[in-house]
Amino acid sequence: MIKGLYEAHLPVSNLQNSIEFYQKLGLKLAWRNEDTAFFWIEEGKSWLGLWEGKEYQTPYHPSLRHVAFRVTYQDLKESIKWLESIKVEPVPFGRRTSIEPFIRPNQGNASVYFNDPDGNSLELMCYVDVPNELKNITEKLSFEKWENLVNSKLK
Image (cartoon, rainbow, N blue to C red):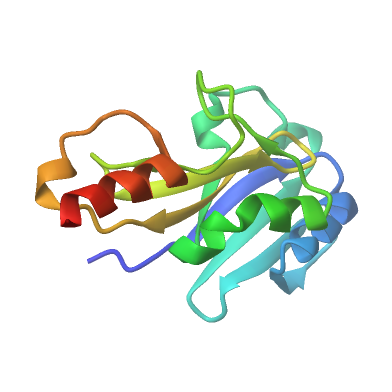
C-alpha cells in the first residue's frame, strides 16, 4: 500500500528563509510562487509544501507540524555530524534529554529530531530489522546499546 511520503505541508513565517533551510537539507525546489514553495523529497513521487502567511500561523498541535524524512540506517548513525555540518541543531524527542539518534525496537524504526526555522518538527527516520525476540522492547535505545544487544543475541 503506502510506499513513502506523497506530500506534507507546513506553515512558515518567512518563505525565503525556509527555502534556504530546506535547500541546505538537500531538497530540490520543485516550484514556488509568491507565498508557497514545494520541494521534492523523492522527485516525481513525494514533496513538501511550505505556506507563508499569517493565516497559516494559527497555533495547533505540534504533531500536525511534523514531517519525517526516510534515510538509511548508516545515514542515521551519521546524522548528528551531518546536521552540525549544515548548522542545524538536533533536538531531544519527547521526554528524552539526549539529541542522539535512537532505536524503537517495538516499532522497528530509528530517529533523530530537529526543527525548521518556524519550529516545525522534522525527523530523519529509518526502518530497523528487529529480531523477533527483541520486538517487545519498548525502551528507546542508543545505536550503541542496540547494536551490542543484537550482537549478543546473534552469538
